[in-house]
Image (cartoon, rainbow, N blue to C red; front, top):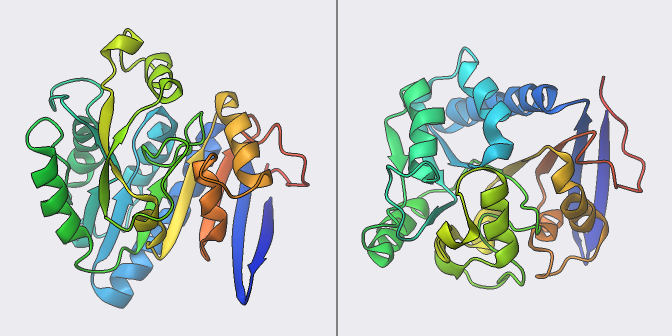
Length: 265
């Protein structure tokens, strides 16, 4: 049901919890229950839960379950998001602002949110939202892993050193093809070539990280991220250096792992 991998680097020990569920619906429910507990704990301890929300097709089941749970005081939840395309209006089906309004904000009534404006002045948005992001610690980040192992829109080779909260990044062909395959765009040529992405260093500043990664198409990226070297060529591998990460997989996304990871029923 759960496997703990421990990685030592000098005196630091990083423990990654890996949970494999039978399918993406059960994965979504398990991750949502975990997230709700973490949000409720942050509200009890600090009066506010500051979270980072991921987007994309891989998050559908998780967000559906998360927004349906009772007993979360959504008025005490503050939301930031990981990334946004440059030059894409919020009315476009692929807009991450549109996604989060429809799948998180409108469903919960959250009033504290800070969304990147990629079709206005990207640098002004980066400065404004970045300052707000760094004003207080982030309690919980939700992230996924891309088919090329990208983390947010940090494609390989990712910058592991830049401490700016947000960066303007170039999207590689693998990342852009993924957006077409998921149905957000008709052609690769339609996918913007640049985006605003939360930096790797900023993601790692979160006190806790929950990683939601279903589907067979993510299996190779999962294997490389969990069993290969920690490397900018495999951006999500950096998660193994964080002290409080739980990664939720289904049987399909975990299919290529060679280490013994039990499966929940």
